[in-house]
Length: 416
Image: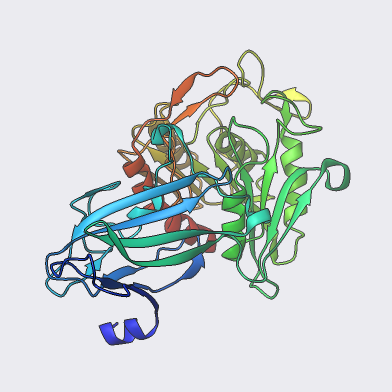
């Protein structure tokens, strides 16, 4: 696409100084920020370009966003403008800042909280069913003076998309259901399972998947009202109830669902694919375990089927009927998810499972290898109960790169 055509499709915001008083003639007094998608889904990259600068001029581009607690996060990068007075974030590597290397979305995922260790902190905007979107403000500063600014809106829910809270009393399961806009092509519903954190997790994933056309249910299976308090004696039949409900929703393919699990949720997803092949038509496994682990906290059984504990052995895969995608980080310090993902693939091969199966291993990423990209995320978790910090492995940079590469491939897997 030519430069003229690209510029014709963007909206520019310019802040010009009213007078040059107090500003050296050696520096620019105004600039233009061009963004190709001022309003876009939160998992979609945007192209940011700053122009109107001087050749070789040092310029700092900042990003700012406010989380659900009212804290203002900030990313920054200092560049040298090129010979045409332009800084293009996709091809310009910062001289210094909160990220390194040319990365068009670096200012988004590298934002840091105003206090605390960024490695122990996650950016949490309002829940998608409540807020719907959040804003990122971009500013350009030269010689300590702001000369341009604009706001980019990051949406969780596409126009026309809907959501509904599900309760045990009414629906038989607890979670939040997100549906695509009316009239969308029927696609497999996606049942999303979080890990040992409990409660209704994966809401943002579900909202984005629905925005891409997949009815999606972020399901709580313990740690919520009416459910087990801990990950202990959770019946697989509960997930079956959720999957059957999901495949009857508007826009859902009635043929079956895809189960998308993270960490301990991936363990449940693989068990469901093996135990209910007529219902589960595919599985996405983030940071997976290939064996049935004990309850969390430990000492008991995590899962039951037919009222009987699921044995703590390697998870069988001989009856898996749908495709399987496993995504893992080579520096995962929670457990060896990369080796476990590869073992799952070998077992599928040995069982002569004909459905497509693939492992995507990101060598430098940790347990935070998935799922959607461009949101600031840490690499360690501090327990609010014990105060103990558990490292997840990897780095913010490596995890961000893994999510940026892996998410479009996961969407393609679902579309296929």
